[in-house]
Amino acid sequence: HVSQLLPGSLDKLGGLDEVVRVYEERYDVVARDTSKTCDPAWPLSTRGKGLLVNLGEGTTGTRFLECVMERSSSLRGGHHIHTDQLSTPAASLALTDAYDYLSDSPLPYEVVPLLLSHPGKLTAGVLLTLRDPVDWVRSRVEHHGTKKCCKCCSVSTAPCGAKEWINASRPDYLTYYAKLSFVYKAW
Image (cartoon, rainbow, N blue to C red; front, side):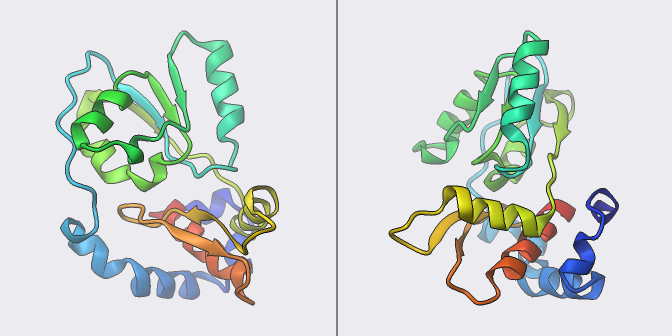
């Protein structure tokens, strides 16, 4: 249970019933039929070894983990590579397969096609860096927002990671987006 890894966060968000309500309201229907929301399927990878991925959202320690991986292994790491800006699923797969380890956005938005294209031994492992969801939203707004607009960054959302931009002008923005982030982590 992800709440055990994030002590006190469930209470900050209104408890388990509230988080389940958010999941059911936002994701339950989508989770039953991902064909309407998921990116087109990526082709099956033909890489010879498994891909190690961190599906944690940015600002959860992804850069730190990238530094650890870079300094302690011979894995070729890709931090914050934009497969989401490529024109075809095959191009996204080719860019992904150029690395041994991937981390940070846009990976949380491409969980389903990424994992389906790397079944079984083609996925060496999946990591999930975590941060208290309320602290995460606050940090994203403080460090990634702009003075020109009240919107910044986005929250990953299960099951296919459709983005929802953080709108800091909402009176309840801290808890609203923190709930979405928690649901992604739990999913």
